Length: 408
Image (tube, rainbow, N blue to C red):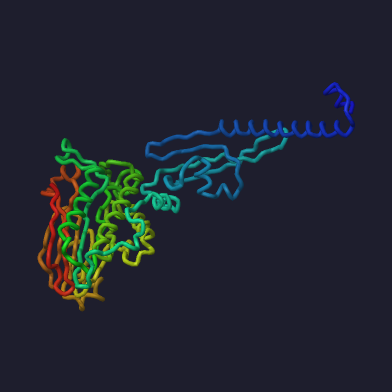
């Protein structure tokens, strides 16, 4: 009580004085710990530095409070140094023990941590990004499963709709390349092409629709704006925006074509957007997982085979023409002998071509509705027109009609 009276100058009961002094002591101890924490934080901040090296790598030095196991955890080190593990690779790490003395807690064991990181050449898909992409998608059809197939009939006719070398995200202008191409123009051309197909085949009936995507649908493959192999591109947007919008374009295209007949969607891997399109197709596969009228082939196989009746399609972004017969007859051997018509559809060169027939194998190259790039223009690769080709296929007779959609 005497201490209480000296501190506060008034008399109280012994019980009240004891409680008040206990509270005061706890407050003083907490304040000491707070001051130690502030001192420790200042010490940690004073030992932080980041250097950007000539090769694009980063060297980060930081004083870190961590356990021995955390010192061996790559994700923990990247996060603690302020780097996103989906955007940077850890090249090297070195952690040295650094003891700090304080009056309250005694010796505090910290680590002087030095790491070297480098930006990833390609984006790594993760669950969070796929979920964000999935949540951002929209459809004009509230109940996709109930979409009516207005032109469906079991008549051995297949409508084949390829979108080849679309290069969504490419930026071109007349001043540099002789043509204008950007996200808005690409979207307008895409829907113009699909609507032309729907309108001109409005009176035809089909048993099935085959929608072929991939084939350089997107112009670039990563955050650095390069192709899968690291070739720089002229791009109209950042990777995140292009990826989200491209996913929406494909879903809208599927919904439009599903009004005709049940649809099979086949993804053809390619050189400009290999990793990005694979991730997009996994999202699209999940989007339609409960729709029995929509089948998605989202596998990473470089060549796909699709059989309709007695007609077999081999789908590839490109291949050496001289090796085509050997490749297709070997890989498609299970369907080869039972097929009357074997048709190989290629893309890549942006021009419609028909090659000399190799036995039963017909080889065609698809044109594109895309604009052309500064690189292709400098190389002298001529794209005479913007055109898309779709096909009516009889399971018994092969291709019986070709629809050319010309973009002015």
